[in-house]
Amino acid sequence: MESFKPYHIFWGHLQARTHRPLELFSHFAKVGKKVQPLRYLTKKSFLVNDPDCIHSILTQGSEKFVRGFGYKQMIPFMGSGLITSDGDFWLKQRRSMHSAFSGKRHEDWLKVINAQADLLVEKWLSQGPDKEINFSQDITRMTIQVICRTMFGFDSSFVEGRTMAALDIITDEVYFRVLRVWPRLNPKKESRFKSAVAEIRDIAMEILQNGEAHEGSLLKILKEKMSPEQAVDEIVTMFLAGFESSSSTLAWTLVLLEQNPEIKKQLRDIVKEIGPGSYLTLESLQDLPFVKACIQETMRLYPAIWVLARENPQSEILGDLKIPAGSIIQICPYSLHRDPSLWPDPQKFVPSRFIELPAEKRHKGSYIPFGVGPHVCIGAQLAMMELQVSLCKIMGILDIQLLCSEILPEARITLRPQTAVKGFVKRRGP
Image (cartoon, rainbow, N blue to C red; front, side):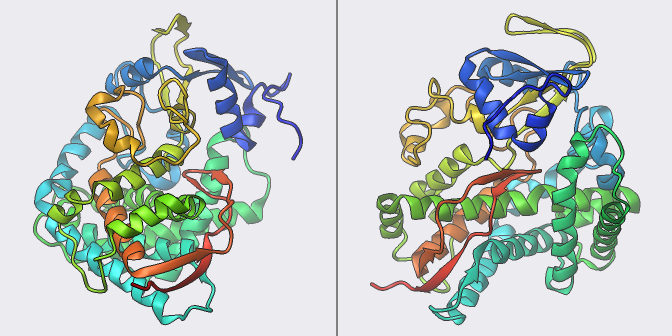
């Protein structure tokens, strides 16, 4: 790979932001400025590295710092869902959907998650110890099933192939589409993308029409409180926001455990009593803090949502800089979570830090894998339950050997492994 050059006399920082964003943001995080000016062609941007400023930006609501850059470009294919909307409309939608993610739903979620994790483990065992398994792909299938069954009472196996194919195309294209400064000149790729968007919206309509609207479920709320078009927007949003973030996090956890055999052994000892058919409850998860810590530490090193963007309608002061109105304000959890002034030995995988230093003792703006403030991820609790249960069952029942544990991150809509995580499994011994 050629040497990293963050700045170009014509493009400014846009080329680095497009093709090597983790290096760009990490480079300027190390410079030590609270707020670092950047330029994307003619557009002014500022990278915010200070946790106090970050917390202020994300908790100010939608008046001072609004969803602009990046989000506007997603509306044509995502519609006006929770991710792309803002202001009063967003607040109305968020309040309408809130009850579907409340504690009353947790037991129902756990029934689905336990069942889907069991099916995943059974599938891997059935393939035998000599069969190479694409863990990334199978975990993604499970994640889609969990979203469909918990939120929409729908069995995604009926649309699995179509869903994964469409989502793969969309997630690859969306990242570059957000940063593109002129229209795409490749009509074949444009047609392929539009077809994928139409496909995922058709699937969302199938879910809306055929899913089981259980009492308290998100689907019931969508049917009762929203137009069919708006309901489809929200279903598409749940797909794009949820499927790859959870699957990438679980895949990264397997990679990090393979890289750190002592921690892997510690985790396996903790979950050794978990066997086929074991049912994990809310109480049993609370009794396994190290499992949660492994997930939290994975999200520190490889946060699925690795960048957040806002715009300021009026000029603002951040740190010691005046930020002109209409600037792009960017926050990079990936570089924030590796700041040595906030995290000792930041490059190391040390799950115990989340037990020794719980949330109330950490800086409130230092750890934001799900965001913070009013726009915090609405499905964060569902994701954490899915990740903890899945990790318990995988490590409690299986011996996993990866083909390669040295996998680089790829920054797209989420921060995912650059290559699929693959390997072999067998039933673990006593």
